[in-house]
Image (cartoon, rainbow, N blue to C red; front, side, top):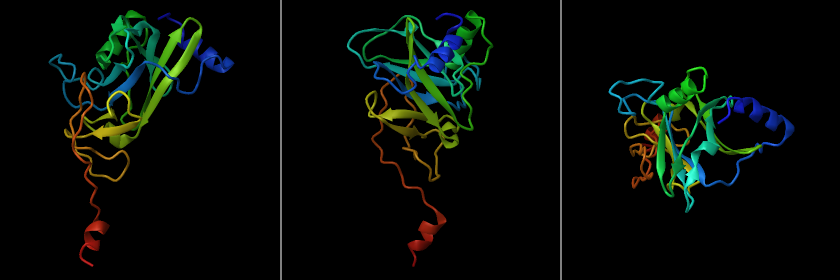
Amino acid sequence: MPRGIRTITILLLALGLARAGSAACDVRLNEICPGPAHDWDGSGVFSARDDEWIELVNTALVPEDLSQYYVTDSDSTVRWSGAGLLNPGEHRVVFGIDAVNWQRDHGRTIAGFSLANAGDAVRLWHAVGSDTMLVESYGYKPHEAGPDRSIGRLPDTTGDTWSLFDALSPYTGTLDPGGNSCAPTPGAANACDKTPAEPFTWGRIKAQYR
């Protein structure tokens, strides 16, 4: 990806040439873990920066060129761009350390994905020639960024509903999405055969005894 792609993207958006809405595309965001609490990338060392991860999936019947895709957070700073092919049906996990390496190789500020635990957004862009479009964006709330929680599509790949995979750090609050009590699934299809438990509030407990 050209070094000046962030500047180009901003100019395109200003001129209305980059589509601000989401667009149909074969590569999609499939799962996000913004608040890691252990060594997800298998390096042997935990890093809150390096162990953040997102998962991409190719829904097409042919390989997709990842060099045409890049990821930003809510401020639209380019954090990572791919390389090589993503095969049909393949789930590809991109860790914070991959973003760090990309930033280092391209002379960028080293920040990883910089996904804020207080809430942020992950945006996937597709750039071909002078045409840059936002494929999709997922904005998550603070409870979705709890330790080792991920947010993923259900059904896997095709679903427009995002579920909170919170088996490693159960969420007992009342905000949507509620926890599904299943574990994150980096690099594999999102699956959960459990019914999300309804959160119990003090008011609900008292109502049972009236």
